[in-house]
Image (cartoon, rainbow, N blue to C red; front, top):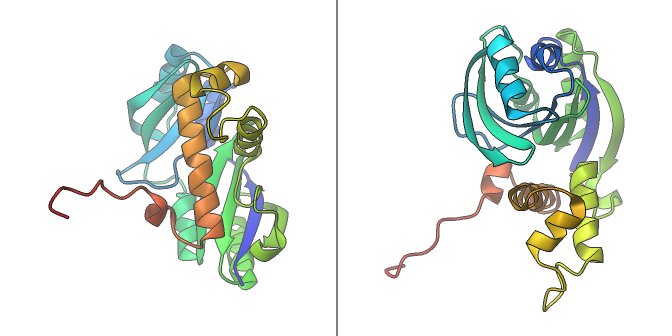
Length: 224
C-alpha cells in the first residue's frame, strides 16, 4: 500500500547549511523534477543580491545560474560539490520518491512517497547513517488521507484553499490570477509556479505517478 512519510532532516552535509550560514533569512523549495546536472531551487527570504552573494560564498556550491523569478522568489539551478549528500538520489535508492522538499528554517522538510512502509524505515536508516538527524513528523497511507492535503506543503495547501475561497476555480472565475496574487501578497509568477507545483504534488500523490510523468505532455501537432 502506498504511503506518504513527512520528515525533517538536518541541512548539514546537503549544501543547505552553507547557504543558510551565508544568508540566515533564506528559505528554499526544491523542484523535484530535475533535468539538469544540479538542483533547481526556489530561493527567497532575502534580496536577489544577498542570495547571489550567499551562493558565491557557500563552499558547498560549485556553480549556480538564475533561471527565472521576481518579487522576492527566484529559481536557481545550483550545482553542489561532490562531497555533499544528494538527498533526492539517496531517497530514490532506498525505494522512495520525494514529492516535495522545502527548507523554511535551515532544515529540510520532505514529503516522500513509498510503496511499502518498510521503505520508509530504510530511508530513515539511510539518512541516520549519514548523520542527517531524521525526524518522522507523519506517516500515513494515501487511502487514509484527505485528498486536499496529500503530498502538499502547508503553503501549497493554503494557496489552494485561498483559490477555492476566492472563486478562482469557479466557472466563470470570480477572481483573476492577478487579483488572487495580490490577495496573497505574492507576484503573479510566484502564484502560477506555486499552483503548478501544488497540482503536480496532488497528481503524483493521488494518481501514483512519478513527478516526471506528471509534467505536461508536449502539445500535439496538426499531424498527430
